[in-house]
Image (tube, rainbow, N blue to C red; front, side, top):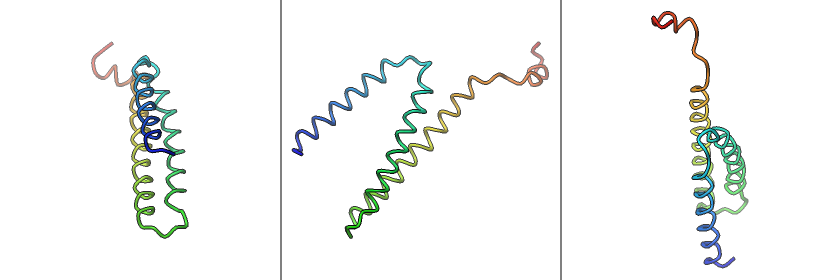
Length: 103
């Protein structure tokens, strides 16, 4: 593909992604993050395929390995943030509330 066409697709995708995320209400951020973590898992599979190609280029190996590492950081961090956000919606322990002096 032509480099200018690829750049145009990248800019269009970045703009569209920003506009979509900006319009999401705060109640939907947690489910949306869980979905994006699943998509990042697919990215890991693609990075493994790219890094494991049969050509003996060191550049392919370095880029594939860095893609796997960055995608794993994204997935793990996303799940940690999602777990913390879901923790805000859990009910407090009734025993802990009574010990604190609040009735």
